[in-house]
Length: 213
Image (cartoon, rainbow, N blue to C red):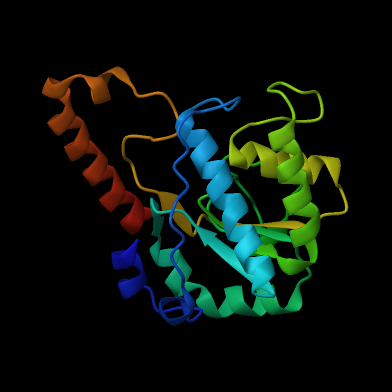
């Protein structure tokens, strides 16, 4: 992520960025995995810091996020649309397909992935309360319980349809291909003989996405 900031000269990020030490819980509790709980608590921690510092909005970038060339090429249009459009969430990196002339557009369906998104301060209190309520419920609760943080954001948005969510019409960032700390490890991440081959394939995929996305 430090290397990404060094080559990324948009929105004043290198100057205004702050690194949040990821939460590393001792057990997974009612979450799907230990990593899922840590990611959830880390996002919640960032939101609390942003609220305490009276920030107008916060841009959340997970440590495996990588930016695409489209972000730099479209930065002027992106800034104009962000400044002239009302929003509560903005997903810059996602798996959503869109057909629009604008760089950002409204979206009300669930979104998988939360590695590169912005959240406005007008929903800090409501969102923090919601996430803390999920922590108090058992897993599988009908109104939402401990879950992956991207699912928590989507559940919050579904339960509060007045929330305005924008998504980039083209992904402006992606998650680097690597062994996941959130999902269960695949067989090729547990088999030493396959590790080097898989890591090489992941590096090639990351290079391709930077150039082609």
